[in-house]
Image (cartoon, rainbow, N blue to C red):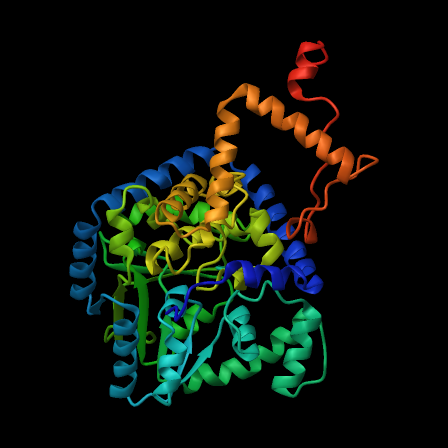
Amino acid sequence: MITGPIKFKEAARRNLAAQDLRENLRRATSHSTTLRLKAVSAVPEWEDLRSEAHAIKKEAIDHLAEYLERFESQATEAGCKVYWAETASQAAEYVVNVCRQKGASLVVKAKSMTSEEMELNTALEGASIQPVETDLGEFIVQLAGETPSHITAPALHKSRTQIGKLFSEKLGMNFSDDPKELTRAARAILREKFMDAGIGITGVNFAVAETGSLVLITNEGNGRMCTTLPRTHIALMGIEKVIPRFDDLRVFLKLLARSSTGQKLTSYVTILNGPREARETDGPEELHVVILDNGRSQLLAHPHTREALYCIRCGACLNVCPVYQRVGGHSYGWVYPGPIGSVITPELQGISQAQELPFASSLCGHCSAVCPVKIDLHHMLLWLRKSAVDSALTSRGERWIIKLFAATMKRPGLYRWSGMLGWMVQRILAPRGKGLRVPCWSAGRDFPPLPKKSFHQLWEEGEIN
């Protein structure tokens, strides 16, 4: 829950000055995009799969109430207990109550952005219940007292050296920046937690309306430990996670891993159909499914942004976004960073709370180009910018500058005159062809010098054909 307006510019300015952070982000996002490109190029039908996924999600969202009711019916028939939560606080309260009823003082959690949205760890700790994150990235940020900075790679902002120092300080181990050593240390701690926990909490990647199945996609095996060892399993899902048919998984399983981590398939695909039956030897005795709205119905009702509910949380748009690559996920001030966060947060939390986020984009369109379900992200950002301007949430000076720019672009004569004026100013203030020093702007980037000749001049002189 946001207690005040998100200060993106302030946080971004602070993170731009952190050279270590920028290097970590550059290295991690570059690696992810390279792996993704290689994985995608090996699938000739990639664009057809994207179109099919878009159509499936459109069908699910256009008939959301129907498919959610069908999912509830099938899941309940399989023995699940389904709870509908209108708000994040209601969902967190339900989870805390289940933990109290079961006498659980320790819960193990698989990675779940929905639980971050619910601020579940804070609610559990307030009830004297210890939550333990078991995804390695989530385990790292929990040790650091931070929140995830990426949808699929929570500790992407940290280097191996920083993680090694953190483990040495918090776990009392000898310093090492070897990933194998660090993983081994985390595993030794988490194995005991898995055995002692009374309740396992996970997210849900997909909920199948046709069968009532819950689908979890993980790489570390911790998801299966959370769903099989504790006697009670609580699954958290947003209303948008439902898909119509079991056969639809064949499309999303091909898209999700390649878009997220550059893998052909994730290491573990877990499909759950209710709690353990008498003849089965593992699995939970009780399975609770919490279905969360938390503003998604408002998103659904809006024709300009409802497509954001198609998101399958792959994180590909973050990896290619030039803004995210520079400032990192914590600059966005809430659970969901990057382009998708800049759309979701203003809608779920209110544009007045997150008025700066729609402007945290270069509008290059790369986010839309890589989205595996073809969400039109950059046009949504444009519409949200318009909403911010229409609501007078931007500064008066900025609105006048934009009006002047629009008037200039609509009038060829004024446009040519402004170009000549700009060249004259540059000759006076930036001699020898150097870029202008523009207050605020030039602190973190260059203002490119204007060319000696305009496009129109080059065209008229025949230098451009």
